[in-house]
Length: 335
Image (tube, rainbow, N blue to C red; front, side, top):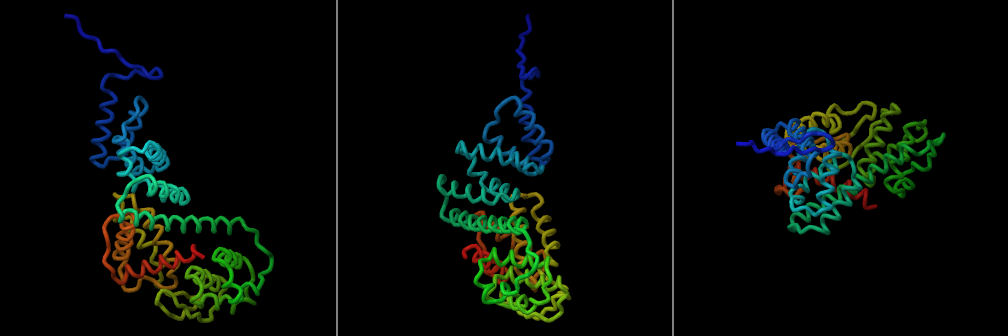
């Protein structure tokens, strides 16, 4: 009896043996199930050379790319699924939003959220969460623009003292206030110490600007006590000898806890870390007093979960503080 011969496929002079692609995909899925994402990604990398992977396989592929620190490739796949209105895309929304946060593409994040809210049917709770995330994306994009503006703006030779006088300073918009103080780090501020101190002590000033003013005084070696008030905290601070415990001082330890808790769930790691860092700066020179690093990290993780529409939180003092800090940052963008 003659043997049946199966034809070998060729793609760009590469022989594709029967069942080879199917084996690659099956192996990729198995490796992903075992959390061996490096091997899983390699299998999918090879398989996609020969066939167009179906949407379900692509959703697993995206996860492996994220886990192997290849977010830009993961983003491209998500964008293709979004364009096609793939039925699996709704399951991947959280991953896609997280990719944009990780890449710090906050303006793109805002555009995607607008499209999601327009084109997809979500529950009211999910819509509320997406709207919260949209507000956050706008604030992050605005802060990103401020940093670029400050870095690109030329420094004047002399500090204009009258611009730091409280009445004039409070009439400026937040970006102008921040740029003015950033420039002051490169100038002689001896004649403007009282004005900068008034800015740091004023509760009518945004908390992040108060922080910047206090750091500016410290950089100039000012030792006059400054009375700081923010978020219900009050205390006298020597700018040149700052407190041993501050939110900025604890930031890295709390961030380490966040990494530990989310090391196998990278979908929220970037956003949670971003929030901790921003809030630490706004809280300075105060901290999350009375709470251990682990407790602070877990509460921020729970808070970010709610932004992605996962679960709800009962009010408690630490959560109320987190919301209060976040609300203060919202006000800055609504000026």
